[in-house]
Amino acid sequence: MNIAVLTSGGDAPGMNAAVRAVVRSAESLGHHVYGVKDGYQGLIDDDMILLDHQSVSGMLSSGGTFLGTARVPKFHDVAYQKKAIEHMKKRDIEALIAIGGDGTYRGAMDLSKLGFKVIGLPGTIDNDIAGTDYTIGFSTAVETIVDALDKLRDTSQSHQRCSIVEVMGRSCGDLALFAGICGGAEFIVTPENPVKKEDIIETLKKHKEKGRRHAIIVVTENMFDVHALAKEITELSGFASRATVLGYIQRGGHPDSEDRILASRMGTYATELLNDGIHGVVVGIRDSQMVHLPFANVVGFPRPKNPLYKLYKKIA
Ligand code: F6P
Image 1 (tube, rainbow, N blue to C red):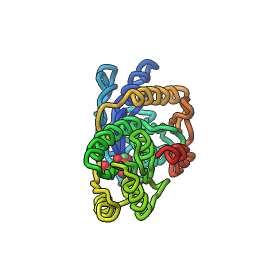
Image 2 (cartoon, helix red, strand yellow):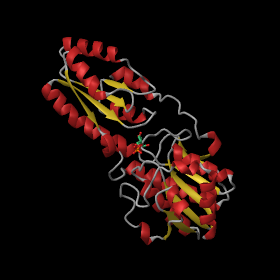
Image 3 (tube, rainbow, N blue to C red):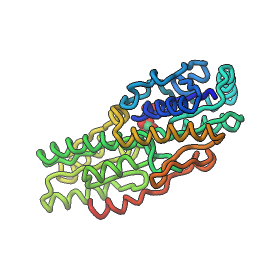
Image 4 (spheres, rainbow, N blue to C red):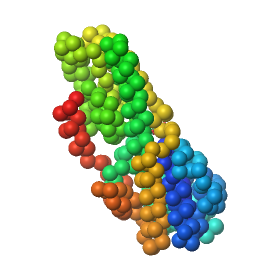
């Protein structure tokens, strides 16, 4: 069987390791793999290359995605989806493995509805995909944020300041939650755990009165204008405050060991599913086990609120 693989949406550490696992496990089952350049754009443009064992050498540890990625809104249009299928069929490609987040899954589900064999792999730092405990790239991004929090705490403590740290996650607070717990944040503000700015300021005033030297606030993007919040905290709480927006450094870098293992397991599991004639599903990890669920059970479904919020509230 000829299988195509693509990475789409925001790049995430471990995407390359997943492609490597797809290529090598597919080869060992006697299949051939085409790498599609720049996500769905490469399917539209007929831009794909044959990959083999050697062409994914060194990819286990590399960040970003060597295939390239893109956000391609026009792929919602069925005409482009049909063109994509036509380009794959021309090469006798029977199935596609699409690695990415929710937007990637929507494109994959559309191709599946048109009768093409597709499997989705969760690759996004946001950890915002239903049906899986973790997504590829999340663990590395948490490590990156924790490293930044540790450094910011040194300066906050030295200067008796309050650091506000804006992290990514779109509408999912898992990056802020996990990194905030690991970094000992005083406040974790996320879509699942919104906190009013007045309450933050009141609590900071009390902390100041009790003689606390510093505070860290981790905020999911789009919750606040963090620079304006820093100004208000400085004026009203007694703590001088500065905001740091971590931005794209959260997406880059070598995948950590957890992401390398997760990506290797998921990539291999996906090719084994195709080999067994299973498609139209997304791969996940639940309680350390590989699982697969139909697209329709995952796409557009929110994740339940993480139980770790209870832990954070007890130890913040
Ligand atoms: O999905 C990953 C992510 O980094 C989100 O956390 C963020 O909201 C979004 O992508 C940013 O996307 P872009 O790089 O296209 O601006």
